[in-house]
Length: 273
Ligand SMILES: Nc1ncnc2c1ncn2[C@@H]1O[C@H](COP(=O)(O)OP(=O)(O)O)[C@@H](O)[C@H]1O
Ligand SMILES: [Mg+2]
Image 1 (cartoon, rainbow, N blue to C red):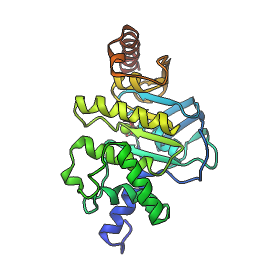
Image 2: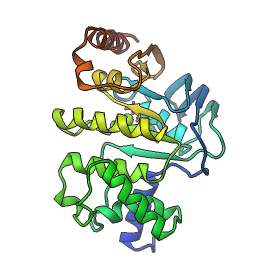
Image 3: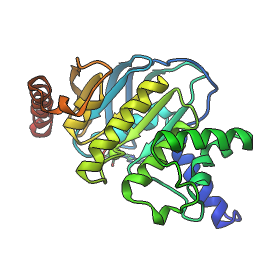
Image 4: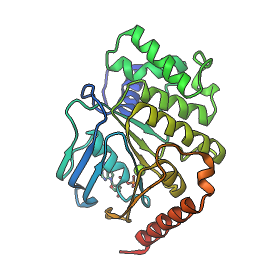
């Protein structure tokens, strides 16, 4: 693929493509609507028609078994692949950013340069890139680590950097594909609080795919449960905990009972079909 492009540049292009959904301009809190959106890959039905509305500035979590089409759904929202049927409604100016489980950092770039990467490919001027990257790094607690390299960072720090790189783009919507699946539990809890704070303070519209029911309920305003292949939405839960959430919430009876209901729905989706 892409013969003739030096390895380093090719790596940067691939990483940037992975980290950023197509740029569409700037705007305010952006709502996303999917109406009858489905996806087939040849003879495989990856996604049965899905209807979803994600209110501007809200947080949606999607849980479902492996292979049920969660990543496919995110890629459709990002505009990286086209749905086989249905419509995605998103303002034309909306800017999206993607964060994956693998932080997709470039090992030859330091923390600051990694944080600037996506902005570079968007042709944001150097001074602005430096300023935004510094701010985003400070927001995720990486101030003072700008000159370190990825191999010098813990798993949690790599994920913070990946988040900072996405937020530095000032996206209208953030697509998170199991971003915290590979970090240890303590770090994950902490990162959830940081992610929540970032989302609330920026007003970004967030869509998170996760295997972790507790993570979904802790972070989201709405949790959608998908069934095993062919993927479809089998349940939706409104999460009534508001904007200010603290770790104690995790042990409250309301939280525990909502998480149990989501888990039960997830189990049902696994054994059906
Ligand atoms: N580019 C592709 N070509 C063919 N099949 C694909 C492609 N992407 C995903 N699939 C298939 O679509 C289904 C859903 O995949 P995916 O969205 O990655 O699931 P999930 O993220 O829920 O694990 C799987 O059966 C997968 O093999
Ligand atoms: Mg996936």
